[in-house]
Image 1 (cartoon, helix red, strand yellow):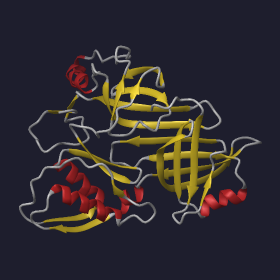
Image 2 (cartoon, rainbow, N blue to C red):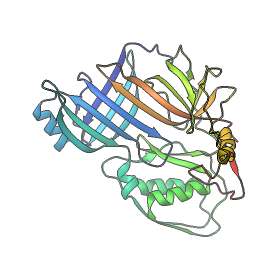
Image 3 (cartoon, one colour):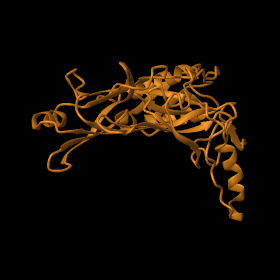
Image 4 (spheres, one colour):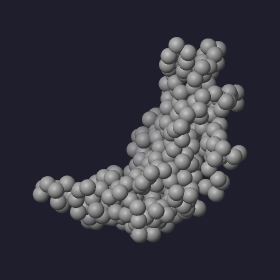
Length: 327
């Protein structure tokens, strides 16, 4: 993010699919958003303070959509858009009431979309995935599903016809595994990312001058780092940590039975000499009237070697023992 990170701003809008909406940007709002490159839908927990009874009833009975954008000095970027799944009212103390909204990104398509799709012989993977996503989008009425980032898939075509039948997420998972990709829904868009690559885009630089908070640390899940709340931190893309010599390293177990596992972990959660990391998880937390305003990421070095027994997916090459993130 090239914008200087001061004079923070937020746009928090709740509305209906028909276009009616209310802007809560001037209220005190607290939110926590969980985003990842895994298949489960992204989620958002939003608390809005001291709204009137009539407004609370509209959120409960009329509105279905949540959109949150954040930024600095008039430059806003989307960090969540999704469908309301839960509504709760409560009181924090004698003075302050609140409305809690829990929303999810693309969960209706994920949970309920089904496929009954026949592809003729000669169909390419690039064409097949477009038809799968189109069919998946047809099962969602509350939030439109569209096509996000798709890599260049193999050019080999189907030697015979193929039938896709069942839950769309299951068929999409099989397709992604067959083409050595992971898939997820990001802001209503289905994206595929190769297991050995990342989404090409401008690479944000993370340093103390661009919002780095605290010291990055090596964990069992990856390299964890915190920055000022930043919509440029996108799932599936790369970031450059300009602080590569200052990472708190993970303490491995000394148990003799854990030594083999430690060796696999060293390759998976290594640090990268060039400071380049693939963003697996980006959790955004904010309080429009408080101190909380951060993005916490869990990242994987672009040259990490991930053993298949701890990877959440398996590529076509079943004889392989590991994959390299940037192959």
